[in-house]
Amino acid sequence: MAQNKVYIDSDLEFLIPQYLENREEDITELEKLLKKSEFNQIRIIGHSLKGSGGGYGFDYLTELGSQIEKEAELKNEKILQEIIFKLKKYLNNLEIIYVEK
Image (tube, rainbow, N blue to C red):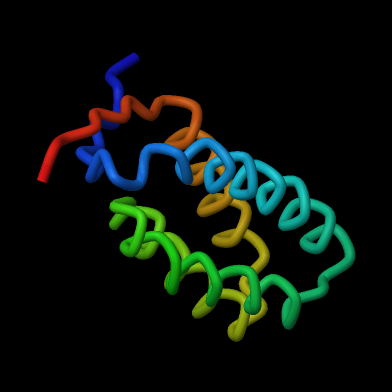
């Protein structure tokens, strides 16, 4: 499977493993919340993801977070499932390349 290459400032290298671990926890939480139709909590996680992704160099996470936030407001369960799947697939196929700035 093709990797999702992401180029990240080497100054952030020590933060990235914990950041990605937290995103894995987000997926678990999103799946639980979706089963319970807790759309407001899903929206909050999406908003957080939208706000943090780009700051760490993960622009696609910002995009997915924005989609999660929007679809949670619409209570669109089917599309939320698809976005969570995209999020999982993205994180499972990340290739991080640290660059000196």
